[in-house]
Length: 142
Image 1 (cartoon, rainbow, N blue to C red):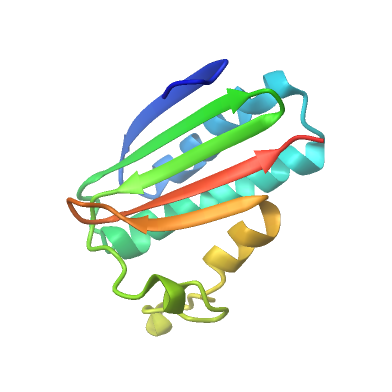
Image 2 (tube, rainbow, N blue to C red):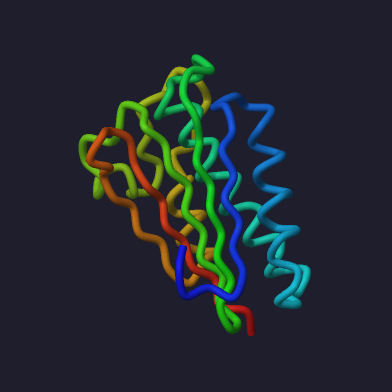
């Protein structure tokens, strides 16, 4: 990660217990930019949604694989990437539509990407060359 004033990279096993850790670690790291409580809560929620998607959809809750999280700080911008090497998403545009889920039988609302887009200033979802996806999010601290 270049061109950042500060950055952090974390790798965690793709298990639900680590969602809370990644969410808290990334939010804590962003405090140096002096975000409001609302901005911190937005970051925590967006990271939680991205990590949960990796665990539930990317690795199908099997506890196999890893989640790679990175956060970079620059001026008043926070850039976050959440990456998995799981099964990937066949149709990213379809997956980003409200209420779309591949886990209907598991009480999934299908709102993860919508929540991320509502809380962050930019959200880009891309396929990884080796499988899985990258969720890139940007938040501008006002």
